[in-house]
Length: 243
Image (cartoon, rainbow, N blue to C red; front, top):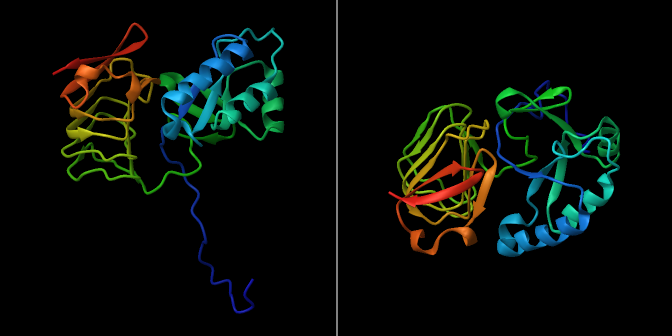
């Protein structure tokens, strides 16, 4: 530390809440072998997107009375290149295990919002870092969203009167409208709304998601790539149709 540095009373950091979108891995049953194989296949479809992607592990669908190896689960997820940051749900005994593994313990609030114990955050989960994050209170963006930027709003629909670049991220609790090419990643219905939709004039996205259900580009219908489309959630799956 420099001996010339003085304490001038000015804060050297800000600590405040922010709304970011993050992947949630919802475990449907306790089958580590199947998880390993299926997760590896999912990563194979989009290796660049999932590499070093932060993820929260949801244990809400598991039987709380069943024995469960959280350390093994975390090891499997990390081996596929993900960065586990916390858990949701699960038996009480797993919460102490999560703490030992340096994972946050999160709880779901009404409307799909998340809360870290002793620290309130916005949906979905707090991310450690998002490059050039832009928290927009306005619901209309007139400029292009460039590569590496994140645009996240905490209420309503998001309308972008331009294109979204590769590597960019946009998210809204409501629907998303892009009057240009949609590249990067788009997350609609971040508060858990299944009625949210995504509209764009040219589908080139890396990933689209509504209420936590997502599709990567490799799963898009070939005849709808580079087309004007709408994306909606129905029957637990995303459906892409031409406009």
